[in-house]
Figure (cartoon, rainbow, N blue to C red):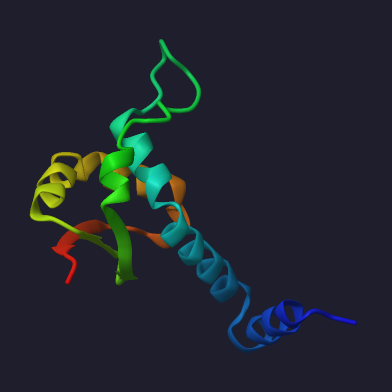
Length: 117
């Protein structure tokens, strides 16, 4: 017996094609990867220190922000205080570059920030 997810995946693949499903999976992964994106943007691996970035770098900023939307190549990040937006803006280019590197299939072109309600 097939699982519901398999049936739904098969249906969407037939209706919209495999590119749609790959894009949907990547988009879903983007929303759940914000902490990793922030951590890598704060402490990218260097030639002197290869491997994963520092486990604590950028985590406070990630804890106070989240991916709210992704549409038309624009990644919208929402933060819970204006100070966190300012801090994130200091790393905006690194955040964009990291997100683009992790999700090249999504064609992320810009990052915008807003205060959560």
